Length: 162
Length: 253
Image (cartoon, rainbow over all chains, first blue to last red; front, side, top):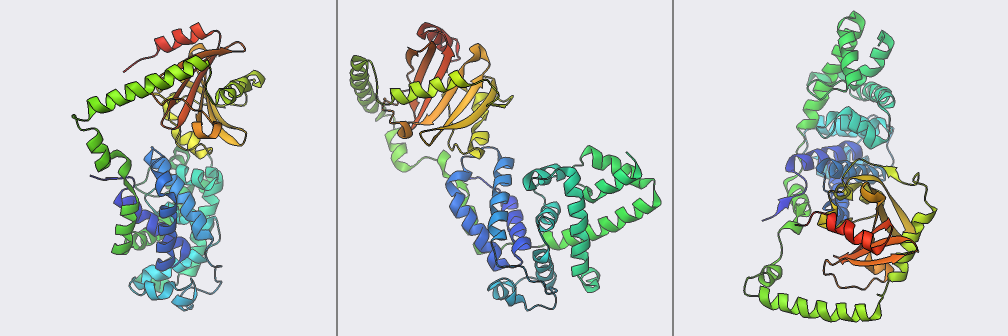
């Protein structure tokens, strides 16, 4: 009988995190796969689940930040396959809203991109997010504010009306 | 908290999530100010839309099954060979072999009045001579709860004998000796210091039998145990006899 070191719900959230950071499902899958394969043995050594998740998030973030340079083109106008390596073909199965949102997130600078992505996931509360990103709460707050304004400007009104 | 400060904390607000107390206060203030309330409402509206899309993202099934396989904890299950070895019929045989081997090795070690790797252990304990306490990061955890903290600081697989796990730790750190990491914990009773290191790093060769080897060195009473590839040393200012008394005071399963 096997025990899960990471629950299914957390794995889903880690995938969403990687998708928002890389902007493409292919790259997100690859980043997650690489980190978990690389850390398979080490994960089991971190006994506390929240520490384990925080550590994994840091590794995934690091891995995703090594993905190709961010395009400055507006996400809606850019060809999907041209932004993140060969992610386009794999993104065909994703709903258009998801693709647009993921690519918009990918266009954000750091730390806005990671902060906002973590803020919208169910992994951590704000204090933990600040800790994971190495920020004080007072520093995280303006980062989230800027991130929101930037993502809103990247998404056109149809996104919000759909 | 004034309006300006409240405004600065509002971006951290997300309904339905645990609220940090400053954020909670900011939200309460915003509720009483029309301008801030409108801003907060717009923020919540944007967040709701984005969260809805994000939470609808489902990982590809093949990826999730691959990842689930990677994140199974096999360490608790035990393999088939292990199960066979622990079969009741095998236990007396194993026990006999272990006792004979342990006796032979122990006798050899005792006759030599030393053991390979002792020199490194002595040097490790001597490190404490030059310490003033500020080198250690304060902690309030039990010694057995420091595995994650040590892992983060670069010492993987920290583990101590069960009789030490409940000792209240007051400080900890990882230092390097000959380029190899050593986990050090200061525990409350008797101002004792624990050292945990990988035996292979320091050439320690002792039977992994859970026995404490007691010796004294330069005013330190020391006890060493070798288990699971790790050496654990207890060192306290005093004699070998004082260490024996300390060991006797520890809970035994």
